[in-house]
Image 1 (spheres, rainbow, N blue to C red):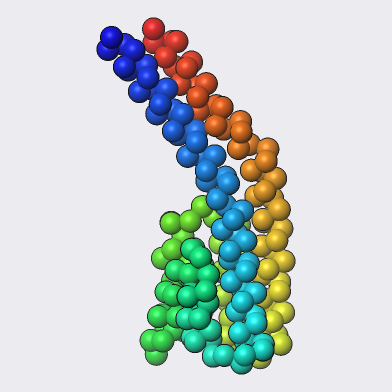
Image 2: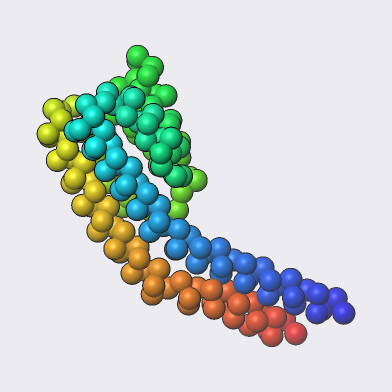
Length: 171
């Protein structure tokens, strides 16, 4: 009796682990898309509305879903402090939200590089920097979707099958 309960717990745990890993694969492209959309919204606010950076970040935080909403909310709060530079406020905001996302180091590097130029140029140069960051994120999104299509089903199956294998070996 206890063997079967233990077997079901092992299979359940490994299955849950496989589904969780597959979930991270499926959430990553969606989160990249949200970040891209938020950068495009920032472009529109800067270019067409002539909105100051702090106010634009505040608007974007109320319009976008997570993780962009939290990123721009924290960024808006950090740049409203007078002692913070835009570059450090952006980097600290990224660091604050990063552990709660499924994004990888590649996206982090793109966003850090974008933050290096944020608020340092005129509107047209800033627009070019935003378009460059969006292009890099497009490439990362494509790569993330390919990985999702390639590995998501396999990881789910691997979770179930590893549990079954472990139970067979123990019995």
